Image 1 (tube, one colour):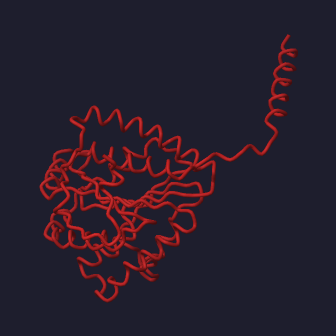
Image 2 (cartoon, helix red, strand yellow):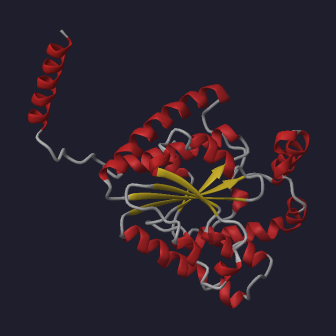
Image 3 (cartoon, one colour):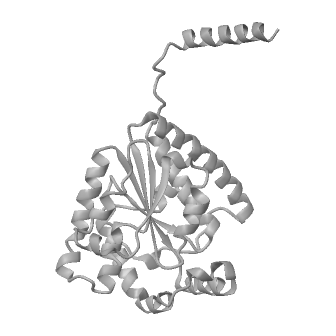
Length: 282
């Protein structure tokens, strides 16, 4: 199967998240086999990122969205760890500051978009302004309902200037979320991630699902597609995201630039230097 096709949301597709199985694991029977494939994909991703950085013509923006405990941090940690930090960074978007609220909702996002040759991962993104803002009525409907087209215009502009955009919704079940909350409670090294909101937000589960369905339907475009990733199995989540990223980057046709110097002349000078320094050592 092709994850980039099977998990991709078509433009204006009718999206019902209940039709997507969050426990899906494809043909992979166990975690071990998947981890071997993930490691291969990491190495390939590292090579492709190096070429993207050297080419310095295009960039890659990856948006990660999920309900609480959906695995955004896990994807950042496991999928992108092989990338060179010189050309890859993560931008996280928490509750907006007073200064950010004094600007339009895309202002803080603009500052974090990737430069040419760079890979940027958004851990949460501009979509918070049609998700949590909508669910908790932080602004009137007449305001947030206009943001879908504003987001499409923003992403269209990025794409027209050479930024490839991939957006992943990490889809977990309500039961899996509760199990992950328990794991946090039982693991002292992860208890810092616990908040009261984890449980109060569960009461809004259905509202969030509807908000996500609308965002997926209205904002999955040819330039900036959405993918619904089954994420109950963390290893399959990482595998699917990695496969889609590698396949997309390979299709970009990235190539390293030609040398700007005479390689034959540089090689001649190298051998001459080696010879001269060997004579001095005698």
